[in-house]
Length: 169
Length: 229
Image (cartoon, rainbow over all chains, first blue to last red; front, side, top):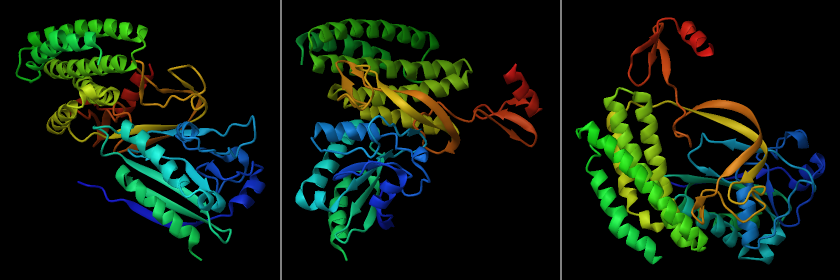
């Protein structure tokens, strides 16, 4: 049975305010956000998705510059959960300027993740899906989260949704 | 593709696999199946030698091809062991052999395109699973970890260029977790590790093995106490 992709859009707390509150490093354009970035009471409670290091490798190899929000020398623990059939990406944060100054950036980001997962899912895990959240800064400075859940082939559709979201009033 | 690997494929690997595949049916004589398991052990030994040579020659494609062949031979071994285990009434082992057959088939396909055809074999294993086993209730632990190590180069995973699940010079990259804390244990439908499952359950005061339905204990507390001892 073919799985249908699901995309949803929701409000997201002001990232800059949360960064200041939690005592983290302000990202310049792109960052990976911990799973509970929007709700954690303190920096010590933060948890990255287990695949955060993998995405860091993918972005680095593609020369996508990502700024860690953790201060130098600090480590945010990662979650290793194996009760999801889907591959769960860390939350990807993009500033408005990053997306508008480099129109290929999101396409390349999603592309390198897709290429890796194509190799990882080769053949047998083809019924595995992807869960991916992208937090974007809108033109008016507010933030939205675009959630994708579904087959790998549907991931490319997220790009259009993100660009519509950042331009919406 | 490396000529030595091609020659090995044509003259030794393919004929051996073809011969052993003949015994991958429950009705085949157990003695033939045991013998086929041993033949596949020998085959894997031969593959390991060639892989080592390919690594020495820095031929990554050939080394990954050998890894794929190793996994393919292992998958067949696990299926043969599944049938043997069923005939010997070792049903827990039978389940584990099936899961291992599925995961090594997956690994074979991931390692190199030489095993692309094994997708069909995976569907066969899935059919075997549906026919032979009841619905399995899986468990899945959740952990947090501080650091992890790349098994290819030993660096902090994420600091090197290796990606877990992919093959490098005949070995899969995996992420070894360090400084681990357990968060939870969940009951799930589709875990990553299908070896972890509920093995027995209490129904009407009687604890039964989930696969065989045999009574494990009429006093569940006795069973737990025995496990602790």
